[in-house]
Amino acid sequence: MMPISRNVLTAALLALSLAACGGGGSDTAVIEPDPSGSGDTGGDTGGDTGGDTGGDTGGDTGGDTGGDTGGDTGGDTGGDTGGDMGTEPDGGATGGISGSGQRSFGAITRFGSIFVNGVEYETTDATIFKDGELSTEDSLGVGMVVYVEGTINPDGITGTASLVIFDNEIKGPVSAVVPNTNGDAKQLTILGINIIVERTGTVFEGVSFDTLAVNDVLEVSGFPETGNELRATRVEKKSTFTPGESQVELKGSVTNLTDSSFNLGVYTVEYADDDLAGLEGTALANDLFVEVYGTLVDTTISATQIELEDNITDRIDTDDDVSVEGTIGNYTGDNNFSINGIPVDASTAIKQPQDLRLANGVIVEAEGTWDGERLTATKIEARRGRVEIEAIVGAVDNGSQTLSLQLGSDVITVVTDNRTLFDDDTDAVEKLTLSDINPGDFLEVEAYADGETLIATRIDRDERDEDDEIELQGPTQDFIANISITVLGLTYDVTGASFEGLRGESVSSETFFTQLSVGDLVKLKIDPAAPGVAQEVEFEDSDGLDGADDFDDDDSSDDSSDDD
View 1 (cartoon, helix red, strand yellow):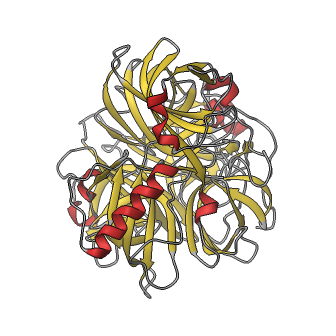
View 2 (cartoon, helix red, strand yellow; view 1 turned 30 degrees about the vertical axis):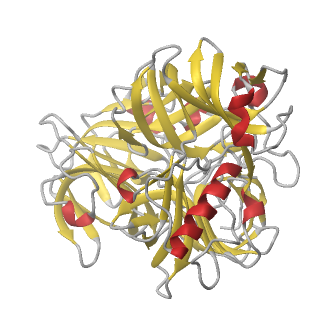
């Protein structure tokens, strides 16, 4: 299950106890958790991403769910990549929590306090850990996958956090950068782990999608996918790699243990007794799951600290309210799957959108109650979408939480909610909210369709160059071969367009339309000076998020629900 460093349990409980007693100074140095721990990754990339938009392309995420079902990747590439992602301290004795305990695990989507899994948590009195140290809300950023402990108010959308924990999934130098065929995603290799980053779906700090390079030392947060992959929700550049000096962090299962070294996959960890304090008395042993901090030369890590990680489900109390966001794995039916290693039964859950098809690789958020063995979900919601729009803002309505996007003379309206992630690449504000967006701003929007309504999952404000095209991606609703295509209710003339085929190759108009069917996902690039006219038309992967088809580690089964 989702591992967590034991060190944070002691630190968090101590901090909470001191806070409850009015004691404890802000200078206290505390070693912290390993919130988004790792474990077996398993898991299918792809899947449906907010509605019935495709099949699946992978295996199981989630790691161990009562047996070793996720498949350790540590033997090959530096340990498990996070299938059992946990950020959780002791679910029981957390001073200051009243009523039923609330445990939430998901990405921060915006600020004003912090928004996690659709709840705006007040953090004024919360104990916050970041990268092993006591911290403040100001140190957190959108896209960070965090664990939140606290209570939720009767309105269901506001609450009070007593504890917030962030720990990166991996930190180290990039050894390879591979773009996908259409340039919307890249696969980075860091310490043997393959990390998918998306132009729209990943938050970048200190680096951009276009400037990612070998030897960038990156701190990554995200969700595990198939085999040895992690889909990044946030990437932050810390430095340029210097062998023997740059700090790295790697998680995995111990193998080939001696009195001075062991392996995490292909990496040799050299250690001394002083580096084992983080194990808190547990003997270092083969198969023990740990996180190693240190410096790297070639494939040798000189450890400065080694921490032990526990399973998150051991930290959740029966009848706790639990909300978990992540990748579905181990799917056998709506009543039996996992999200980041947490067993889930969603057989009676309300789905949003109603046509949401659960499958391995789908990124969702499930809410419900922990019964001691699994999460019985009352609601499960798509957290990613395959509708994408790049356009200028025509109007903003803060009352209805809507944005109108101008596509030439056409307008598309999207709805935002507490789960919509806001990111600002213009650096005009540090933490973007809907009220910061103005008519004329250029946005990149990701959404899913819930009936006739587009629900925004991500909004990225960007600088706009004069030669930027408007882009519209969505399922094909209708077409007239060689003449027009209708997407999201808008019909575009394609008589002068260039076309890309199913594999990203340039094709003729006749070949493209021979391959096209209603329902296929397509992207149109539109010249703002010629409303209603598409300049480029290309196929997109209906079965998964950007990069899934290119970088999937496991092309097994189309395991999914078929009742929708």
